Image (cartoon, rainbow, N blue to C red; front, side, top):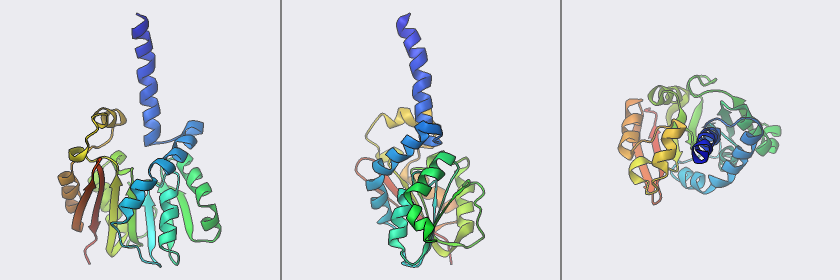
Length: 220
């Protein structure tokens, strides 16, 4: 009986903690996004190596989390401008703290917003990135079309993730991803998804351990 009670308490708690990864909130959310900045640094740098970023590019990071990706993109485009959007107010606040100097200099801007309705005009960005976030989007194909809308012709989207279904050796992900309500797609499914959404020059690269970079270009 005691074990059953412990289980009934533990399972909802674990699920709640996992969902902080999906949409951080409150004091715990602030800690989660700080941890993500550290945990996803190597993945982010590897993923961005698949994207050509110009010094004066205008860039958007969707689901900017703690702001480390925005910070890295601002370094890669020192004469450009980087925007970050996230639907979590805790993430927006954390990203603004991480990029405070660049925001003050007018090179970075962070806003609350959703990939379902990006608050930008058509053909605004040279590059759009999404690191460890597209799993949670409400309608992947429709949301990628929204990204296509805000990309300039010839612009690039990059989906960067630490787990792709057919390259993931860790069985824990096959338990955690459903608990998070997250899409856990294969490499082929990512390529098909980008193609259906209207992107060309689609490429999916993976690395041992399950990392993935999926890129596509808006046709000129």
